[in-house]
Amino acid sequence: MKQFYEFEQTPFRNELMKSFILPAIEWLLGDPKQPYLLPQMSSSHWECAIIIESLLKAMNTNSLIEPNKKALIENKMFQTVNWLMEEISYNKNDNTCNWDDATWDTAICTRCLFLSEKYFESKYSEEQKNKLIVIKYQLIKWLIKRGINWDKDVRYPAGPPDLAQVLNTLILFADQYPLEIKKIEEEFSWDSEENILDRITRIIMSMQEQTYLIVDNRKEQLSFWVDCFNTSEVAEALSAYINHHSYEKDRKLVKKVKKSLYRSVRYIEENQDSGTWGGVADSCGTLYGYLQVTKSLNEIGPKDYIVFQALRWMCDRNQVFSDGSFLHSSYITVFYLLALVEAYSNWELGKKNTLEVYDIALWNIPAQGTSERSKRLELQLKIEDREQQFDNIKNEYSKLEKKYYYLIWIVVEVSICVILLMLMDYLSIDLKQIDRLYMILPIFITVIITITPALVKYRNSKKNL
View 1 (cartoon, rainbow, N blue to C red):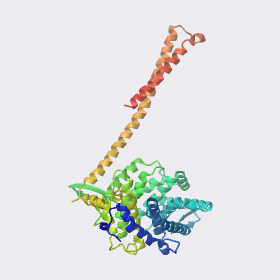
View 2 (cartoon, rainbow, N blue to C red):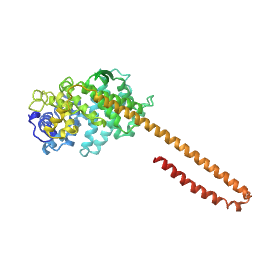
View 3 (cartoon, one colour):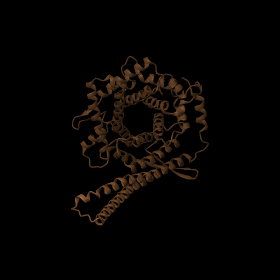
C-alpha cells in the first residue's frame, strides 16, 4: 500500500482511490460468496447503511471501479438493503416503524433507504415499490414523532447527533415530498405554528455550547456540541437546513444558524491536533462532516492543510492494514471509507497532481494562529445582515411606491372628473341631454388612455434607476 509521498504524478484523488478507497471497499464487501456486506454478519444496521451511502457516492463519481467489481458491489448493496427492510420493527398502535427503537440508527437507515431506492429503481417490482412507499411513510412518521416529543421522552445521552441525523433525513424527505411531510405533520395536530424542521433546528440550537479563543489579542467566540465529532454531525444537518427549499424558513432562525455554523467550523479547525480530532472513528467522522459543511456553505471553503493532515494521518501504514481495513475494525473502517469517499468527491485540491497538493497544502499552513479566518466569517455575517436590511428596505419602498402611484392615479381621475364637470357647465350641458353628453365622453376617454401609459412608463423608469 503506497504512502502519499510514493504517489505518482497523477490527480491525487485517483491515487487515493486506488491505494486506499478501493482496498477499503474490498474489505467491507466481505466474502464474495456471501450475499451481504461485511457488517451484516454482526447485524449492524447503521454500519451497513453508512457503507451503502459511501458506495453509492463512490459509484456515482468514480470511473476507476472495474465493471465486474461494480456488479458485485451493486448486488451486495441491493441484498443488504433488502435485509435492512426485513429488520424493521413495526408498531401497529401508531402505524410507524423503526430500527431497534434507536433514533440515530433509524434516521441513518431511513436515509440509506431513500438513496438506494433511487439507485435501484429499475430492480424493484411494482409491488415492492408500493411496499417501499408505505415503509417510508411509517419511518418518517416515527422520526417526526420523535422530533415533536423530544423534550418529553427520556433518552440516552448524546442528543445533538441523534436530532441532527433526524433533521438531515427529514430534509431529504421534505425536498423530495414537500406535500407528504406536511400531511404527516398534520396527523399529529401538535400545538405549534412552526414546522417540524424549524422545531428540531431550534432544539439543536438550544443545545450548543460556547467557548472562546484568544487570537491576535482578540476574543473569538466558537460554537460546539459536545466535541468535534458531534459538532461535525450537527453542523452537517444545520447546513442542510439552510440550503433546503421546500419550506418557508424562519429568517431569524436561519441567521442564528449561519452564525453558529461559521463558529463551529472554526471550532473544528482550531481543535485538530496532529491531523486528528480525538479517537480514530471520531477523526474520520469529523473530517467527513467538515468537508460536507464547507462544501454546502458557498461563503467559505475547507482549509486545505486541515484536510491534507487528516487524510495523511488516516492513511498512515501504521493503522491502515494491507487488506484495506482500518485496524481490522468494521466500526472504524465505515467512517474511514465515508471520509475518504467525501474527500475524493468534493475536495477541490484533490483533483490536482500529488506534488501540487503537497505544495499548496504545506504552503498554507500558518506559522502561528491568526484571527483572519474568524474576521472573514464575521464580516460575512455582517454582509448578510446588510443584504437582509437592504432587501427589507426595498420591500418597504416597493409597498410605498405602489401606494404612491395609486394615490397619483386617484388624484388624476378626480382632476379629470372635475375638469369634465367644469366643461359640461361651460357648455351648459345637462346630464339629461344624453346626445350632447356623448360629445364630452370621447374627450374624457382619450385623456384616460393617454395618461395611463404615461404613468406606467414613469413608474418603470423610476424602478430602473
